[in-house]
Length: 146
Image (cartoon, rainbow, N blue to C red; front, side, top):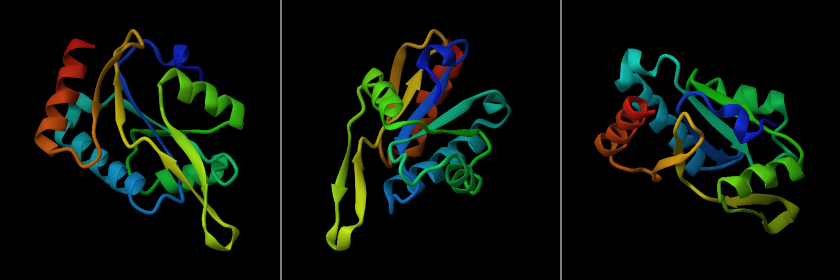
């Protein structure tokens, strides 16, 4: 797991999700890939961090395989439950393990992409299925202002 202080130096996006997510996470990753394509060369050094909130199932290998089908700008991060809780708290992210019938579980979690400035400060969010033009403007603003 990476400390949020280590991410300072350039603007970035961060999303908290999990690989077994049936809808929100894959949709968000597809949407972010489309936005990166629209940014073109401006997205060259931009990173999107995907922090898993399900360390029981999301090993580094599982996370890497999952994210490889979406967007090369995405970096998967995982860690111990305590490390994930610490980072989630820093970003004020909600997540919770929710039991399902049959003994399985899912994860309930915030569905925002957090946009962070190069100083590590919060700048904006992209909401789940936000209109692409509006999300693109937020990303352009982040890259222009840092």
